[in-house]
Length: 444
Image (tube, helix red, strand yellow):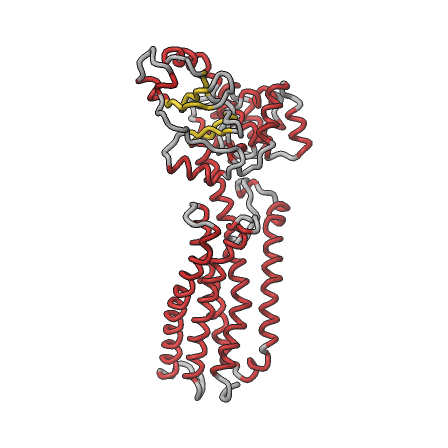
């Protein structure tokens, strides 16, 4: 037994520290360490969202059925969702009918929705209970509930949600007060099972909630989404978005646990797509082959031109993806963004163009490099080209997230490499088109 496994079995560490240690172990060692933990402690560890490879760990544990049954419903569903069909079916077959049916219901919801985030373990009482009766009921069921942030008061006939009473309100109420009179007399803030998790996070943040009930069309409570589940989901979403920004297929596994084959699969697709896109750059340069032969000096500024447009587009894309994710913008606001980005791009392009023209003038007059007798026209070409390219980069980079969202894709897929590739090709066309106009009759 290793020192790490011995420490885990001792049971003296905090759960978060145990999770960190397990994530650093190989799968086989992590399974061995988990098997040595007391049952209740193993359940606590498996219930933590920070634990990686939960599904794989469960498939290797002899008491996986008992552990899944004891885990909170949302975490058990999340673990099963990460497995492929046969492994998931095998684990579900080890559960009792009621537990398996509940987990299958959660698995039916799309991964990024409130239904997939929610837990079915919540506290509810019927209208007519007193505060004292509710407290008694709470003591009886507390151990079977993942969290107790609020008490859901239901209509006894329809099971529809009538009121939400927070734990603080319940404790401070007089014992004989009817439970429906304890909570505020207003419609509860609730979400639907198909609501996107980012919208759920926004509602919980705006209303300062610890949990939000998930209601069906009849107003019945299917489960609750807690603030800790939302935080875990947003952290996972942020990690995915960061990976997408870099042109990598999102993965939830720690870097060192990703196999070589999986690493190639995650990166090769995007890299090949971007390479094919960059091949269009070569096609654009071939199209202007004659102009390049006549004015070779123009090639000196191609890297400058391409990078400036790509950087401008990446800036705009990053700002717009964040604004869309936070609900600061709607799809209908695309024209407002366009009207804002065009003058922004023109101004930024003018700034970069002035710097580039100044640099050419300085190098020419100082004798550092001779751009030829028409150096002023070359400076004007580079300056005007930068204005056009940066403006196009800002506009295309800001519109791409809108287009992707309108088509039903994640706006984060508008990664920086993707935007840079798009702007590289069009940037060359803009640059040489400007050169044809400015240098016509002189170098061209």
